[in-house]
Image (cartoon, rainbow, N blue to C red):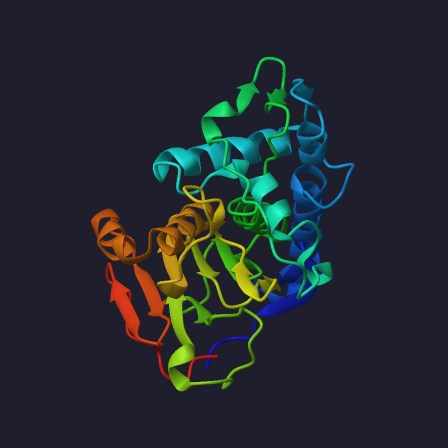
Amino acid sequence: MNAPLGRAAFAALGTGAVVLTVEPDGLSLALPAVQAEVDAIDRGCSRFRSDSDLERVNAAGGRPIEVGPVLMEAVEVALRAARLTDGDVDPTVGQAMRVLGYDRDFGSVAPNGRPVATVAAIPGWQLVAVDHLRSTIRVPSGVRLDLGATAKALAADRAAARAATAAGCGVLVSLGGDVATAGAPPGGGWAVRIADWHGAPPGRGDEDDTETVRIDGGGLATSSTTVRRWSRGGEQFHHLLDPATGRPAEVVWRTVSVAAESCVDANIATTAAVIRGERSREWLASLGLPARLVALDGTVVRVGGWPEPVEDAA
């Protein structure tokens, strides 16, 4: 029987956060560290609060804006994601998101609304200007950044590292299903349940909808088109946009999960895989990334050494 872990959960970044520590006594030190990192990402990178560094950049009308180190790092991470995916994961989708109706924290987005008459073109990540010497970021007037594809995963990586240092033991941080670990894992590794929705209770739905894997370190991310959905004029939308069209990506995979050296790298891969559709199977295999892809009909495809599910895991 595995030794008990320290565990805490709280609401964060429009979703749920879970913190686990190998040593239960380490939780009291790990939890404040995680909360501090989550708060820093929210203040730097949220597009739903007018006082964030991100929204000051978006509202600057093309002027360079001095920003803090958190947004600077987050934008660099987003630009790296764009380069690695040939622009399939693009941070300049912000205006398109607003046009489609995702213009506030998702819990406040109206589930139904008027038809979307126009589609906002995606300007392209190459238009983002970062000046490290002056600590400024500039986007052209009318261009809006949205770091939703990478900032939450970055928060998980930063939080896990900071919490492990504070607690002096292994830590797992999950932010809406984006999982990062730091420090030595518990015996047998961290058990992580994979599902379309990170908050789904055990046993919900079809038995094939969920499974559990164990990881010793790094990160694990899941991107899904089944949860953050809304409709306009009877047309269904989800939050993963294809930069080539400015609209939600055609759904080939309802859920993609990837394990990688960091949560950021895992999340870049899952987001790009949803957008790339059928092409993603070969692409993920070529990268050697363990991945689990679930088709619309529930068929599960495992590539890159993704294991068969562990029975009866916690």
